[in-house]
Image (cartoon, rainbow, N blue to C red; front, side, top):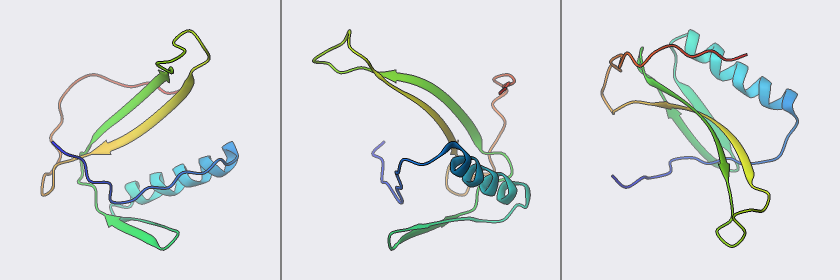
Amino acid sequence: MPEEVLFKFERRMGRDEIADYLRSVADTLEGDGPISLEAGGESVTMTPPARPTFEVKAERETSSSAPDGPGELGLEFELEWKEGDGGDDDGSGELSIE
């Protein structure tokens, strides 16, 4: 399925600033309201269902020209749901983040 990017923001920032953004998302999720994102004249508002799919991914990307060289590490947090879906539980286990 093709992907349409509705909003994108990328900038280097301090860990404390990132934590503030994540706290804002967490507070909004607990309040059942829509999540609005805005930066550089772009904006989008989405309302996650009560049970979206939560994906956590830790990855290492390496260059195809230097596969043994230093890679880029990433940690991604993603919420997914089908438009109009209530977000069924897939029962794939528990997650621990420390």
